[in-house]
Amino acid sequence: MNFQNIQLDTTNHSSLDIYQSNTDIVLPGIVVVGGGSYKQLRERDTERVALQFATQAFQSFVVNYPTEEQKSYAKAKEAIVEAFDYIKKHADQLKVDLNKLGIIGFSAGGQLAADYSNQIDTQAKFALLGYPVIKPTLDEKMGVQSTDVSKLVSPNTPPTFVWGAMNDGLTPFLEHIDVYTQALAQNSVPFEVHEFSTGNHGMALANKWTGVVNDGRVDHHMSRWFPLAVEWLDEMIGIK
Image (cartoon, rainbow, N blue to C red):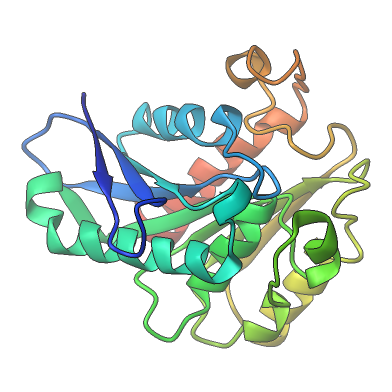
């Protein structure tokens, strides 16, 4: 595997990590957008998620958008656009199938991923959203001005896979996931949703692989989201 980090154009506070499998054939691609309330980008749902998708023959990418003093919802959105533009421009070199390129986001990163997937000129062919922020109810806590992404959903929104946990008090089901999946249904967007009875917010892969960098937080049942997402992706876009 080749790893490189490239700076994005918006600001020197944004970059793209590239985890490229050495191959002679093009592979599906996934752009990972981590959470962390704009305070930091957590390894649990950035690098380790990218590497997990690499085991499923994806070319994987992580967007490092501005956090802390440089945090901005608008700048984070720009970083994601520039990441997709870079991948598109270098698709032959990166061995990425642009017809099977999508996005995954967690928590605050899930809101950004949903926002990007709903843009008119989005290049995401699918979206995976883990315990996503949907409505701007956490703006004061995170120190940004965001968007109610449920209002962006249209019939052109790409197929979307969403999961969370009923124990999640930070992004409660009825305030976030339920609102978004209702919008998907109303616009006839193909989607699948899993609201696990166990687990909680910020679980990432919910297995030992992320648990070792997430205070030992592991939940076997909630960890099923990953194989379920891979199965769903194979049904939607054919990744096997």
